Length: 473
Image (cartoon, rainbow, N blue to C red):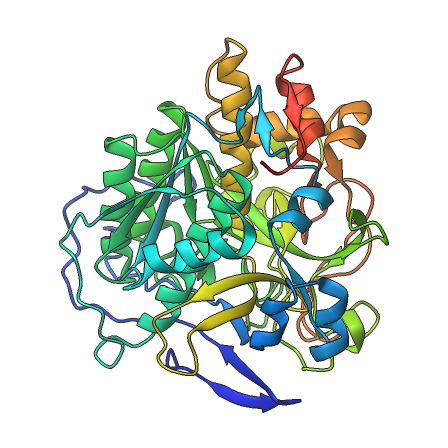
């Protein structure tokens, strides 16, 4: 796996990608620190973790771009909605300006990916031109040196490049004034991604850090006694101490991630990381928020528009087998384990985010319909940057480890109703209904966590004096 998989569905080119790069580098460089729930007394397991990304992309017809990516027109043409910045800002009440400045101004967002993208800056410029966004302040860092783009040499490298484009364009969409710092690891090996994360934290390249990758905990040899888990856990603790909010995707393969039992994804399961699940977002007739379901293409009762292109995936969300319950979850969950997801964002390819890719070659460089919870992590990172901007400009400090704040807001019925869309429909059983899974419901639930954001409500709760503007400059 890891190579491009192409199929023809109703005349639409489909790209379903999963990266399983393999590295033979020795473990080392960060030092061993025990994970919070590791109880083993034997030497740490040094088996490398190989992280995955799973962006789901379908090539869009050029005519849809000419028509401005109107969601209704896209549904009529190909059975997929096509959402851009204006739809997400309207649906989730994301302001374009905060205190008269572009949302995200004064903030930095760190994004960690492997391999990077050879056309990142030009793709972002094309995206900005299509949707009328201002130029981005983008910086790219290579702690282990810049890898040459060679998808024939590295299995899954194209998928990571697509993930990188999705991450950067999503952050710029929702926090257009923020500085974006991309930190590129030399491979998807856990040690190399830990080096990139350590670089981001040690150099404080953002008060927010997004990681749109993960590994099923069952695939991690040694579990909480794995050396790379311990290294990463130490980094996230240090990020929290430094006032950095950290986000990771909860997964795209349901509660079980393809195993016989429920299976959380790491690093989303780490207590110092905010785990982001996925939904299907539907707009109302005015283009604002209509409704949302738990993202699960295999459930025929909730799959959008009849799921004419088949099953792409379902949100993650499950108890951790490595980490025990975090204190911030005690009021909403009776489980003894740390549970994911914490929050959610639109993630279905049927209610897709439009992203531009320019490195695939003639006839393939174009906008694509994108899905997966790897959209949710950078989306929430951008939202956190907006929140930090408002809080800091109001005289406060950056929010840092965000879970305690979010669960605290959700514990109050008034602020919960004003700050979150509670997702009560659907489940994360993939395939439905035979696999292990959990149902959405009132209040906190594993597939979608506390729900999706009402960003204006979060801003008013955390920075009551902030002035918000909802007209695109």
